[in-house]
Image 1 (tube, rainbow, N blue to C red):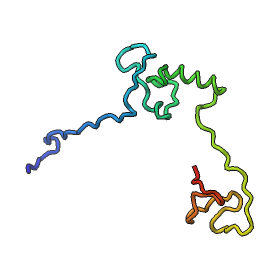
Image 2 (image 1 turned 135 degrees about the vertical axis):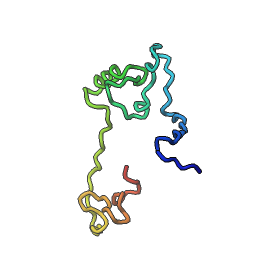
Image 3 (image 1 turned 120 degrees about the horizontal axis):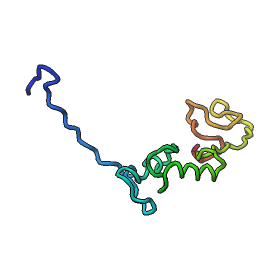
Length: 127
């Protein structure tokens, strides 16, 4: 093994390039007109539901991001295209509810207990 007197004398490290993830690959779009290189590619974040930028340089659903954003804004009254959380629903604590395990006002399992992440009387996990 050779020891280099100065780190600047070391040969550069070779970095292996990983292949692009399939969901990040540009989508082929027959509706998009051909354009300059780098333009006309589908936005990988948009395909995963994570891009809401109107100034994005990639296509959103085959359209420029600014057009796609205005279509969404017109469809939902200008609100962001994010999901609306659902209310948990009413809960009436039954007699004998173990308040060391469950919150008596919501029925949710308390943190640090074996029932945390559940709701009293429900067999479904919290989502």
